[in-house]
Length: 363
Image (cartoon, rainbow, N blue to C red; front, side):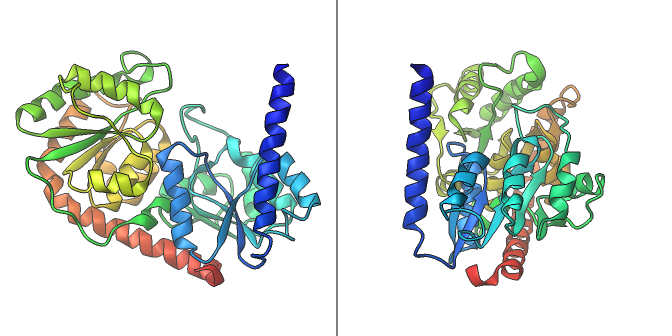
């Protein structure tokens, strides 16, 4: 019975995708495929929104599982007959998880190009170090290879790919034009997360415990924390942290769109972030982040923004390094804000220029 239910669910999903592809058939000249992360995570959703922002005249259509795309191609609803080209979107997608989808797009002889993509381990479900040598043959066939930051470019050079261009994280295309004045009393955004089912009292995230005393100190000094959840799985560790600093009465904001995030965070003086895109979206409004990096992608982004001094690796942090950095950032955030916004705006322009020079008809 369970197997039948699963097959029916798969058939229903395929029928829905087929219907959506048929509806877009009249838009014959502007369909672009998009390989991207799933919904429900603000970081992934923000990058899809950013791709739409950069390509206002394109119809962006998510590229599905290779088996589904093979069936759709036989129906004229995938491949060269359907897509102009294929975008490997933002996120750390040059990793084992996404290789088969890219391979399928290339086997369909589609023109494939990447848009601020990261290289390496993409999150909790992958080990810290992942093998990417199987990507070499695929990447050699890319039309263009725009990556997030310098570490992504270096990782590709290590496997013999020398055509990567650093163009910034895709979500930086959503960067605002002006700074918002910090609110009074001062506030700071905080986003922490750990693998589902874990707490930060054990495992490789125990350094997060060092946030508790420094947050208590800041609160005593008049600072107000603003807890932000980028995904439902962020709620338990954020509740734990707020309880430990006697701020359990504060609402935890579960944000689902970049605009919601910007409205909440723009008046903050700084952000403490574990989720990569809590840091990226903070930079979009000129709010300097302290990045508590859990994978190399975090340092990749911070280096691209010349903010590596405000990155602390959770697995490598020295004792008291995190609270020391929080204290320093609380003291220096005012002078950092304008530089952070200008750097984010520069990457916004780089991303726009890259897209214009790649597919000018869709801009």
